[in-house]
Image 1 (cartoon, one colour):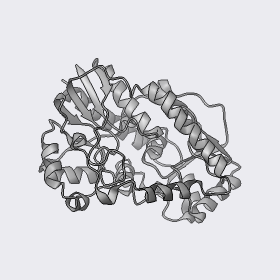
Image 2 (cartoon, rainbow, N blue to C red):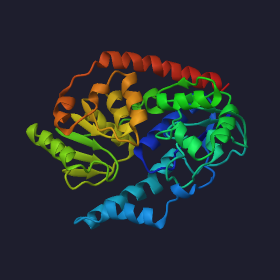
Image 3 (tube, rainbow, N blue to C red):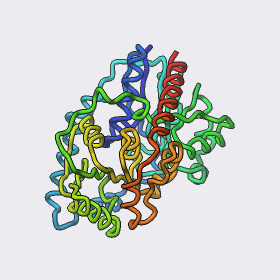
Image 4 (cartoon, one colour):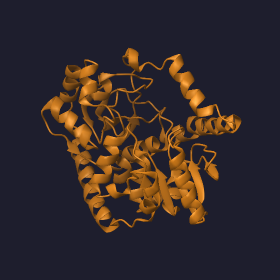
Length: 356
């Protein structure tokens, strides 16, 4: 069959790449032809516009530092690698299919419209796909969008109608499950992110480094002085090097911009991981790492849902002074791996059934 994927495949983000690649490869391994579909431009709500003031503030927050040239250099390299290497590896610009037997919406925050994304609010991401016989979702997420947001922007009926037009709905977190249930009066299935579903071991690039801690975050996210000081103290105490993946931070010993499969290698071989991202947590638990999670308001719902599912909420850093204890904690990975295998099989069964 001809299968399309509507996802965040053109977002410059390692997690977005890895989940998109995993879903595409899984579908192809089922014997289907698969391509990505570009997101249609939607409505931009006035309070969610990417205004000049908003963009200027983001630039100043990110670059207006003593090491501005170094920051710009790393950003340039990061963007160029995605534009000219990683997106090509993923096949984001291959469009040979005009009409699809099935379109899969997901994974990632495909339903999270209450944020300043370039494409705005489009019903295409909620199931209104004109060039498909059937539309389903797989492990989709509303991110930090809530029922209040949906009612506030006056799109409750539209989203409800679009979701109800889908043949099957799968989400990846409790918040998204609750929203879909309220809007459709049907309880969706919850499945793991494609990175957890897919066997990435054959793709992991070996890394020839030792004695390091991976910092996996986004620009301007880990900026609290107490958090930074706690991370640096831990690294110094245990004689570990701080390596930031993708983004430059002056307090890290090294910044790397590897290809996505090398990212997996760096996480796999790390002594510790400090992250405040969903996919940073996903990769950490996938490779049974000792890791600490800094939960943010923008990802609280999905992070807590993920960590609760695998009994790993004790990895959450509730205050900077607890960072060392969290990193030294030994989790029950026998339970995690057992649960993950069950969820992986459930996820594959869902996709296999709904791609018939």
